Length: 271
Image (cartoon, rainbow, N blue to C red; front, side, top):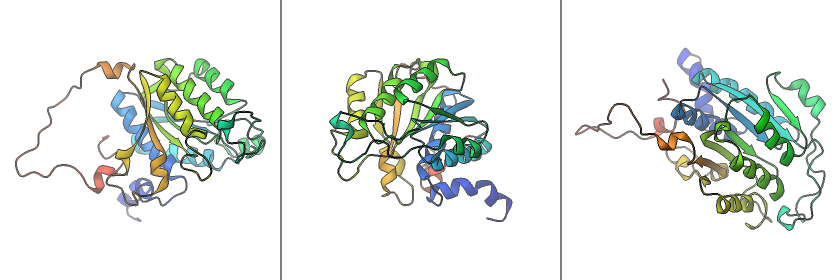
């Protein structure tokens, strides 16, 4: 890792082998970069919902700089948080037997002192702040989101906003991480799992689907966080109405098909 090649690719190899905190953030940014290139975008926005102590948002900001350096894509980072922890709720789908009002508060003033100046921190009720941000922001389209709001209500509001927003505000594919799936004590009719199910049932053109493909050709493919990676595909995006152009792909006789470890690397084909 001391030579120039090792230093250049240290981050992507560390991400591939889960050798850093928040591997889902590193992977999500890498997937989003590929989606951005596929759609011809030069930039995208990465969002963390549920900032709490702020460690995740700081990591997302650091990783965005690394991925941006390697891909030459501009990545804008935004964090959304209530500022006062989990809100009160009367909805049983919010699992009130598991979560408590005020859990995971955010020390927004202290966190803002540590965040890079270009990282946005938006405080308030997400069901209000996120739709308003989507309408008013001049940030690049959303390409990656991490949903760590615990409750059904917040996750549902996030999914609903992404389903209703203008198609110009999102990439045709958005890499998504749902942190509170497959938890002990949270049945599938509650929490983020129910929010995803209801979103897919209410939408025709936009669907959330688990990234079962992503664990292929990766070491440690059994890790739980891989099962929490999803993609939001928007069939109403112009990309889905276009035909792929370029050179015809060929597989010569005796030539091995592409695959294996290198296929799992995030940007080996970005150029």
